[in-house]
Every structure is written in C-alpha cells, then in structure tokens.
Image 1 (spheres, rainbow, N blue to C red):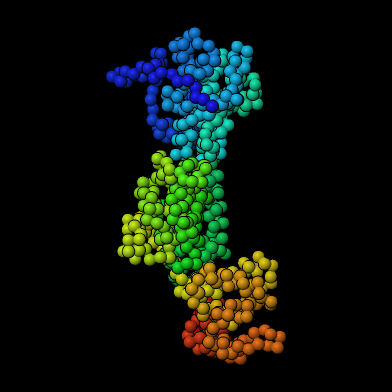
Image 2 (image 1 turned 135 degrees about the vertical axis):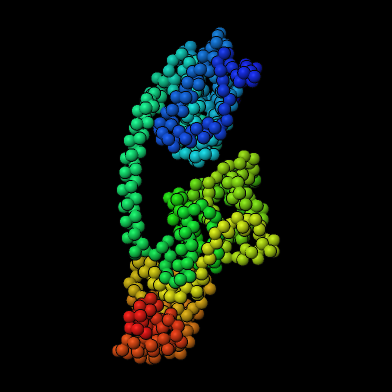
Length: 559
C-alpha cells in the first residue's frame, strides 16, 4: 500500500490581512475539527440520523466537485488518472484525511473505461469526532469523505461514479476503508446510496419534523402514563430495587439512594461484604436518567495492580507486551451510563490518581496514547474498608475520597436488619425451589429460630447460599434444622430440646409443641415472647411465623 502523491502546500495562497485563503481563485476555509464534530452532533439530534447523513454527504459532494474544478484549472493538461491522484492529495493538504490505496484492488484506466479503487482513509477527522462526541456506531460515519470522493472522482472520470465506505473506525475497525468504482459496475450500491444525494426542501423537512415531534410527544405522554400505572402496580408486589426487607435500616438506605438517583452526583456505598452494594448501585442507575444505558461493574480487588490502569482506561496497540490490538476500558464502555467501582479501596495509588482526573476533567487517556477522550460517565464506588482510616494512613488519596463521597450511603449488615432475615430466607426459598423444581414451601419453627438467631457474618450472600443448600437437601415440604449447616443449630432452646423421631426426622422440642398447642392466641404469643426473652424475631421463629405477622397480630390483640 502506498499513499497518493502529495500536492505542494505552496499552491494554497494565504492573505491573512484580508482574511483569505485561496486555491486557484477558489476561496478555502480552515475550520476546527471540533466545530465540525459539534455541527454533526447537532444535525443528527435535530434532523435525525438519515437526513443528517444525506446532508453531510451532499456537502462533501459539493466540496469534491469544487476541488475538481480548481484542479482542472491548475492542471489543464493532466490526464484523468492524474486527476484521480490530485483530489486525494488536496484532501490530505486540507487536513481531512490521507488516502492510502491498496494496489492489488486498484485499477485506474479511464481511457478503456476501467476504474475501481479500494483504499484506506488514514486520520479521518469524521470518525475521530464521531467517536469523541457520539461514541461507537453500528454503521460507517465518514459521510463528507464519501461525498467528497464521489464528487471529485465523478469530475475526474467525466462520468458517474459510486463511493461506499466498507469499514470505519467508529465501528471498531482499525482504519476507515472505502471502495470507489464506475457507477454502472455497482448498480445495487448506486440504488442504495442515491437517496442520500437527493436534495431536500428544507421548509418541508422542518414541517415533517414538527409533525413527527408532535406525534412523538403524544405517544410519549401516553406511554409515560402507562408506565406510571404499571410502575405503581409493580411497586405493590415487588420490593424496591429488588431489595427484600422492611427494616428501618434498609428503608433509610433505599430512601437516600432514591433521593440521589436523579442527580449525576458521585455516590459512595459503604457496607460489609455481602450486604448488596452492587444491587444498590444498580438501583440508583435504574432510578436515574441513565436507565436503559450501560451499567458497567468492575471488582477492583480482583484486578492485579499491573493491569488496573489497562482494565479501567483501556490501552493502545503495542502499549505493552501482549497488546496486539487497541482496547477500550470500562470507563469508555460506560460512556453515557454508569460505572460501578466495587472495592475501590483496593486500587493502587497510581490508578486512584487517574480516576481522580477522570472525575475532575471528565476525560481519560488510554495506556500508551497521548490523546485524551471526553467521557460522560456517572461513578458509583463501593468498599467494605474504612477509607477515612486509609486516608490517614496515606494508602488512599484524600482528594479522591472527597470526590467520591459527595453522597455516602451505608448498607446495614444483616444482623442489624431484624426480621429481614426471615423475609429474605422465604424469598430465596421461593426462588431456588422453583429453579430446582422442588416442592418446598417453608421452614420449620426450629429452622426459623436458627436463621433468626445466627449473626450472619457473610450477610445476605451467606444467607442465600445457606438457603440454596437447604432447598437442595430438603426431603419434605419444609426445610428443617437438619437441612441447615451445623453451625446454625446453636440456638440454646433448640439444642436443649432437639429430638429425632424413629424415622430420623428432627422434631421440635416438647416446650414448643406445647406452645403451639395452646388454644388462646394471646397466651400463645405471650409465652413465645417469654421464651424469646422479649425478642420478637425469636418469638416469631418459635411460632413459625414472620416478625411482621407477629407484630400485626400483637397490635390487633392489644398486646
């Protein structure tokens, strides 16, 4: 592959005192690539993808024709093949892109009616700006380059041509690639492309857009009303954010999460391992304006220090041994969405520094690259560590700590959530019974007591694993104490009265059998409270009911 021959910069005539740049009497204009990128974004947002694409192709086509006329005046004796070289060379001089033809797929013999070129655009400003401002695309985006190549090649060939982009950096390809040929060689492409080059009557376009907008607004209002009704119904039957429990400690954390969710403030989630920090982060994301967009999660403690920056911020090809191609990091993957950094306290100081810059500047730089990339990513971080103590020990950056803790939410450990233990146990039982196809419908009283009295150092994750194991081992319609791990059978009352029937089934002790045989409900509840030392969780377990049910019956009975 070799680049098209260059045109001397001396052909451009500069008169800064008059504000003029000319090429063979044709006025040229130098514009910021960022400004053209911003125009592209606004056209897409205003006109829609299809109309914006057509407008920019027609703009490029006009530029290609104008440059073709200027080159014909400057080089009147040049052959058609020479003109095919001059256009791309002028395009490179203008800073648009550099054309590198692929010799084995290129044939230019206009005298005999043969013209077929396959080439790369190196340094396409369009692909660069699209990635910066709009992110990756599912289709090629070098629209003005396609239009320019079509305008110039048609002028140079003296007959219609067709140009189509086949690969694009915005789609994840290494370079932008295009094919140019005589129009009659690729009629199917001509038919597909011709709609983009059909002129649009702007007043009619605007009127169509206005009518579409009115229809979309009516549809949106109707859908919003339906969604609100459905959300109201769902909230009646589903716990918030898939959290299960009615404890005051959990409700406080969820209320704070719901309050901060609509705002793009950084959130720091604190709590022991297994308390549901990622679930809370997803809850915040789903309640925010970013819902429906990317939610990326990375466990910082699982990243070796040598790979932390590459995983978080991406890397360029050849940045290190084994980097055979460029790769985006999780910050880029979460562009316009939410990034959850779990166990952020385990990151090295070098990675902490780069995260701080990403939060402050809204930009990142891939490992091995000098170019900075603008990102719109909301950060939710979590840790079970004491970050303030780490700041004092200088193992965690103080400025990063304050950046992260704009809003801090602490998830309570399971041992502080009261009756939520039994509610969660029922929830997991229902889930795993259905998953494993088992007819298991609840827990025995002694199993409930064991669950309620355990400290749960592993929190919700430990409880889920215990219930999953119990469902697998269960032989009857209820999970009994024998189905639970041995260390959960340490409840003093349960241990004192543990009995085994002749069939090998663990049964309730006589004291509980007597309790449940009492006819008077008030006396039965008072006796359960007495046995549980006034602890409602234990009393509910003795009765084989939930703490909420116990509380409601006590209230109804005036206890």
